[in-house]
Length: 205
Length: 205
Image (cartoon, rainbow over all chains, first blue to last red; front, side, top):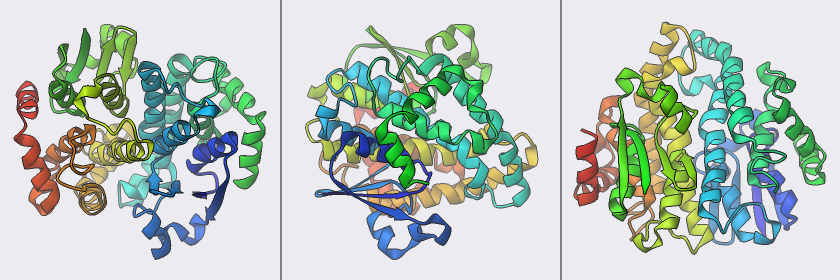
């Protein structure tokens, strides 16, 4: 059985929603970041990066959200969560997920994780001041260029929706009103109506 | 025919090496970042993010390195550049590529692209001071956990090798000696011996 390591309200939410949407059996293990449970020797043996998510399969551990999402879509094809038979469409899905991971998540991370990139507090505070503007820039691009509607890839729910939803939940904490982006806000409401999303959100409360 | 937009010595090098390794016909278009060619209306119509790489196919544009790499591996399967028939191994490849995009590239970007994340110069200088240490931390993890040898995924050359090679070329500019990482340095020399890498490096000189 799959074992899924996550922490509340982190980017692990995206993979978690996909696990719930697929409906496959899995064991969820919630780590408490406040007590640095991601830094214990026990967890570092699972994921040497000391981060979440991590998905433990019978063949080994998978890390990094875009990799976990594609793996779940490929191993549960009946869930129809990625355009697996069309390399061009799959590339569009991967491009969205890669943008979430390397640009949107990174923009957000400068709010609380500034110590990764600068040691002094003044620099970290300077980064924090730019997070809202950067998230707005990202979501303007998403609204205009990436979200086809009603779902990210168009008519079918996919792994990209879980990832976009996760990033969108971070906007209020970054001082950005979701309603500023009409189509993203509609997408967010559509996601909140899914039972799988509601179950996952309860686990991340 | 594929059309490939790149700029010298950027992360586009990874996709470029894979194009050369595959040996498919493509038209390369070199953008000059110094004169902001990635910000022209003409290029923004290709890639609204104003970044490279961008791969123009007969069905549309693909952006983001991990997406382009997987697309090339999938559409030229005879090149054998990804474990396409094994979702778990493909997930390992995707995890490596996602780490390159969202952690290693981002660590490096704080040297010259600090203005993305903070407006004041003192903060940007503070970020610059931490780049070397962050790149060392990334490459210690790569050396210890990701590079199976002789290639990233083991016995077969893959899309991951082009991406790791690209990140490794950035180390000296970040003040980090490649030889500090014995296995990465071996990998780098092995890549430099490939004709496809030599051809691509000449285009990025």
